[in-house]
Image: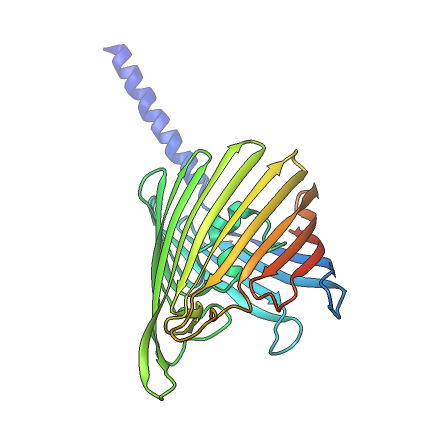
Length: 344
């Protein structure tokens, strides 16, 4: 009996000490600033080019993330990039997002939110400072938009994301129709494997050549599979399709785009990587036309190079980028790049 009472007393004392420790380790709000810059020098070897070489800053990101409580986090990011309609460098509000961890399996995000259409592909590709992922590069979707999304953990290996957004991207305000884009994706992760399927739809009112209004639904589909075979080699492939749009934000009845992207990386060591990527972009023929509507931009892209990371937060890569046009009347592009990414 004495032993039983002693054990009971120890359990009560342990629980009390644990509660006191938890109370002392109360959550303290905290924040952190961040920045990232994409810089490059390139030499254009394309026949007939006038601007042979140039230094560029393609992007500069500045952000701040603040942990309000255990369940709420706020973040703001500004994107400084080139703008054809104004100055060479214009600051955009890229993200103004509130994350609410509603439960261990559901997180809600609202405001100017980061989107999931190509986030996994971009992360697996791993060289955003050199080239955007396929969907972003060819206008199949935007990386951020105004709206709300829910990330749901179905199992330890299966995740879902559903969203409602304006549909115009983070550089434009809501259009006059006031119609939203809806979409969802499923992501499966298991050890070295990642598989993803994505779909969205956005109905927009357009005016045809006769002046008549018509509702057209722009849809994007994406399927992606990536696999890390070992500590030194990984490979990914994705297929993407855009239906009834010349761009994700520009409805065009019966104008479709589709394409394939395949990429791989060989990791030599912690500082050196060798990478390669192949893209293929295609479009359909319109009724009564002999050529595909996007022929001048259809073709294949090749990117290959070597990355060196001398320190944490610094990356540099010597790489070749080429584009072979389907339209033989257009000169194929051929460029040599030295890209840098530095962040804090």
